Image 1 (cartoon, rainbow, N blue to C red):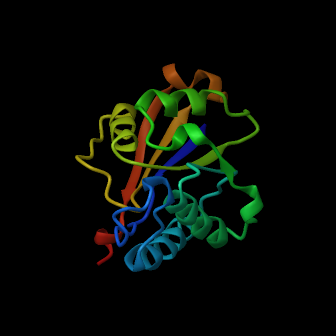
Image 2 (image 1 turned 120 degrees about the vertical axis):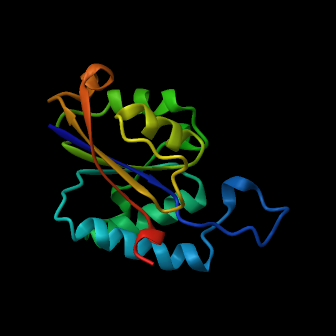
Length: 164
């Protein structure tokens, strides 16, 4: 059994309209929400073996809060350029190439692709993954290479507005 946590980056800043999208940082709300959601995930007593993120500033910053909550090193974050504004198929390709030694993986990315991919995984549907949303599934497989055909079971969804 494998576990997958899809996490949309926390709320980002639009203070500088001329700023390149890739370089947009988290805003004050994102900086507040990310550690709260990271702690909520940690408090579920889940194990995460790998933290994989889009290299965009807002996604990487969000991932760093989760890494800190799990008492891991920021050096452990794997940045994959293909996770920046990806099509849903990119997630499947990325996941299918993961080493089988990893049992639980957190992937930090962006809409619309992350919501579209989450909706392909199980019968549980979400209209739009809000910022800093965690969508978790359990995968009935012992190998990530079998991900595409493996049965996926919705586990939970959580996001900041659920906690107020």
